[in-house]
Image (cartoon, rainbow, N blue to C red; front, side, top):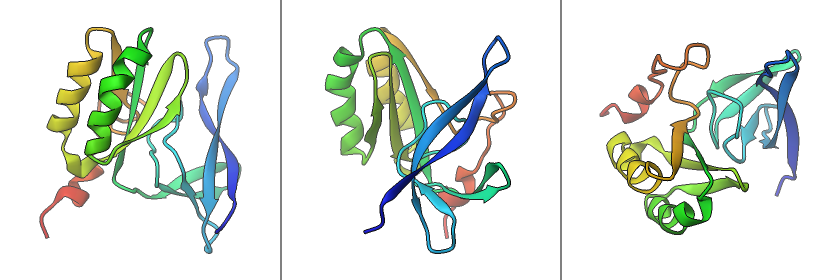
Length: 155
């Protein structure tokens, strides 16, 4: 089994202009691409299982895994997690990152946006907020990326 490595990716810029970098665990593939082991907390546009390739000082997305990155922020995460985590796990989702302030989950898009959003709204809406990390354009935050269209298209 191949050892995990860590890469650093640009995650944004703070209000004071300082660059924010996130350290992400990856598995290096034989072709020198790398595969994300967990969904990121801050880097936009990618999720667990996505394949990346080094491009100079940065990384570019080579292939999507089909996973959605879901970020949850709340002061009552323990309460949310007791019910939400098992509900998402029943659909094949996984809790990737757990901190006192936020959780990051990965779940395959084939579970359906409607089903996933019903769960998130049920368990999070009253005590926190949730957002997708890889569904909308990182630049404007509103334009759907639509990468899931080819994954969900009938064959």
